[in-house]
Image (cartoon, rainbow, N blue to C red; front, side, top):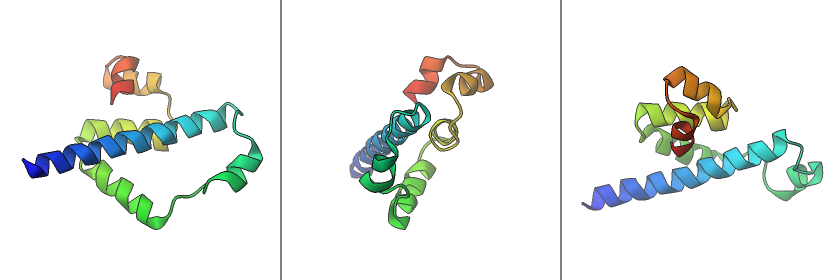
Length: 96
């Protein structure tokens, strides 16, 4: 039972990280993020520890969820295209 709680907490944290990355990417791609904030506000590249944490959390997910998060958040492929590739709705991709 304790392992299940830890796994669920890791998934919750990963969902939050993925949402923040996706939102930040969306802001940058739509030109809504000033260059000064991009350069001086927050770190552009997360630390090595953070990258390892994200990779570890991604590897703990089912393959479909991992694929969707990698494609949408990391590779910036629109949800609609991923939905077509997987044969599911855009809302289904968004829920992952």
